[in-house]
Image (cartoon, rainbow, N blue to C red):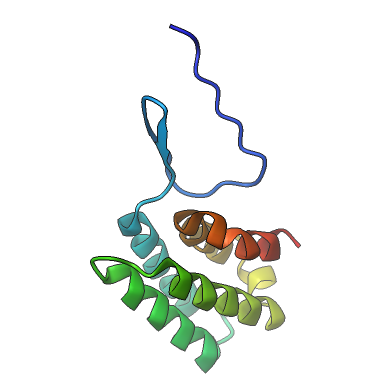
Length: 122
């Protein structure tokens, strides 16, 4: 049996599960838990979250709670949420409390979450 090697060329967030050659990065349940952690972190932040950010997060949680989450819908809202938080300085002030959960949801989205990952890096 040959050794298994996994290479990740970007920051990763969340749990990784591997069985044979298949890797499941983040489940919808993991992403929903992360979205709820994000809501709690926003509530703890000194600056109140904007209405737009709260609406985006409401939509993300609603979509993640559905039996078949619409990844494209979630990706649009997550990118909007991340841009709003970045513009308002919340990502800089709250740091990992926001970036970690956002990264987990982006991980669930796979390639659709790439734009958000780039926003978190830049």
